[in-house]
Image (tube, rainbow, N blue to C red; front, top):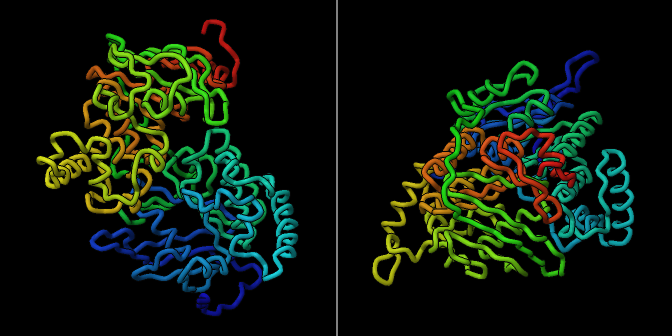
Length: 520
């Protein structure tokens, strides 16, 4: 269905350029949940505009309305100063709007070129269309510095390059307005910096970028202006140069937010987790862990820093019983446990928050209350004889949602319908509330807003002070330095060195790049 456009005279010479996007009085409900409430938003053409807010504030819903995935219950959309109707994504694309979703919409077995062409093949003569698409793709790569091999299989590309493919798809379809939903949630710091350079290049070419994020440093680094949402409402818009991280955090959460972690000294006790000379070989015969050894004591947080892909994921999966060791030993609470399955490890006091909540932490087609007991469903408190105790499960889910501020607090809602940050809270609540002796955590605040980050960090410190042993893996160097009592740095499957938790960024950064410290 084509978009409906109300004709409007072009601006006269000297007249101000109309905004790229203007939303007026947008409201949207999902049953009893009011996701957007009378939203007004103005995005100037040729700028980078941030939209920030807590998880569940309604940011992604608002942008999904602009892209035609949802229809607003009320309100108007103006593009380039003209009132339009956007019934579906095809209408959005026809209006020059492209969207890069938080979870990429790519066909992994296809090549880059095939993904870019998909849905825009150029008629029945596919070879002719392919040749034109290749030429256009090469032009776009060169113009916007988005270098990707057109013949590479998308599933073989690192995440940062997959994101480039999504941006190229939008540009190939003629996007002048590009919406990016939490674009750095799956990127390393280096990949995020590369993305920011690409966005600056897009802006210099006259494109308009809308950046949905909860990371305030990103807002300050790259945007011209930003709008703040809270509980479905638009509460403020600020020129970025005229605001601060502290003001934006307070606007997002509705209260002052502690942007640093307050903690006392650790009181480490007995060794709870010990890894000795662990080696892991993947299915292609590549050695991913190369003789890793470490210890984690009760009452301390040991952080593992490193650029993604240097063995941290394999280390967590080996400890959790998901990956077998080629050699070495793992000891949990004094008992050898290498080769024990995840259920057996849970019974011994190990809890695991995986790095990828979608692939390993949740079944997104299940309700929230079902995900809250995943892996623990055989425990007595969730059973009534041979059957699950539905009432007990529902009550546990309500309690976890309240304790971890999951929004909306709806146990019967499909987990796929929660924002990424609220999905993460469900996983954290499930694992932490089991009172584990040892907690291993991968990327605890990935895709989580500033208010929730504060709460998660505080909870991890409380667990440490209660005598739990915590192994923390994060690509966020600030998070590692803020939480860790000791820092291990990994590079190419090895531990390059150990540093105190208050070590400087340069010291850690050298080890992350493979330069051994003299004292490590």
